[in-house]
Amino acid sequence: MSEITNFRGETLAADVAELAVDDLMQRVGERVRKARELRNLPRRVVSERSGVSLRYLAQIEAGEGNISLAVLLRIAMALGHRIEWLVGEEDPWTSDVIRVADLFRSSPSTTRRRVLDVLSPDPPEALRARRICLIGLRGAGKSTLGAMAGQSLRVPFVELNREIEEQSGMPVNEVQALYGPEGYRKLEGQAIGRIVATHDTVILAVAGGLVAEPETYKTLLAHFHTIWIKARPEEHMARVRSQGDTRPMAGNPEAMDQLRQILRSRESLYAGAAAELDTSGKSLQATAEELVTLIRSQGFLDG
Image 1 (cartoon, helix red, strand yellow):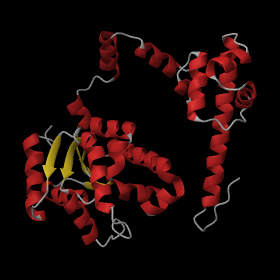
Image 2: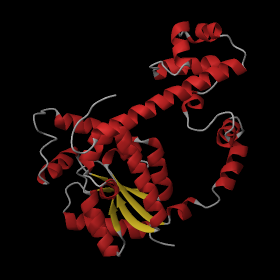
Image 3: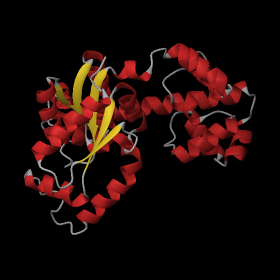
Image 4: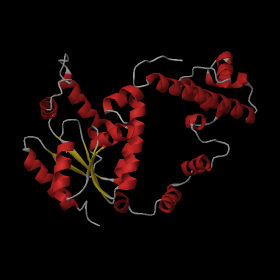
């Protein structure tokens, strides 16, 4: 197993991750074999349909193949199944969840709407309650403005990264180094779930990259009134540097171009927010007052 040594216990985390990968490979192998047998398909036929060699297919069914997503997709298609059917934690032969999901996908739009109405009878406004979330690139001022607005409106303010730190017992940068981007995003989703469960009224500030995680962002949009805090790229960078963080510019002459590219790639995602607030060229106090006015005018704290 992989050896990663330092005082934070990365060796254990690497071992756990490797065991999880082994379990996944065993699960995938068993499902590929069972699906093939239930369809009475010889391994040779699946090999020809998928373009995967007989030897490699045998290794996969034994849980020994270091399988790529591309190869797994070809095998799933050869077996007539969706790729998630092979890798999900739910047992595809006994799970009501998977059966309902398959029926939902094949149903007409009118049926889907009735199902959604039954499963989620509350209107969107009720699901969002009096929860507000500030999204936007790093350096937009989400945390500072959120804290000021919370104080003015007498509403609790929570910063998602601080919530993650409290739960994990370590700084966010160490969380990211230990668990990697995928693990960190999972912790983000769990933290949002806790906040929704414990706060009907709150102002939340989240990291700029959260919107790139589809399921987490979907949950956020469903349970919070979202506001995109935006600014010109130059102001984003200047604010980050004024906070004493020189990493964006250190030894990287293309940092500003990269920041503009990140902003362009996320603009359509940020635009999914219920409201926007441009902080460019404005004082902190004036922007905070504008944010409070926006929250009140939109009725985000009504009800």
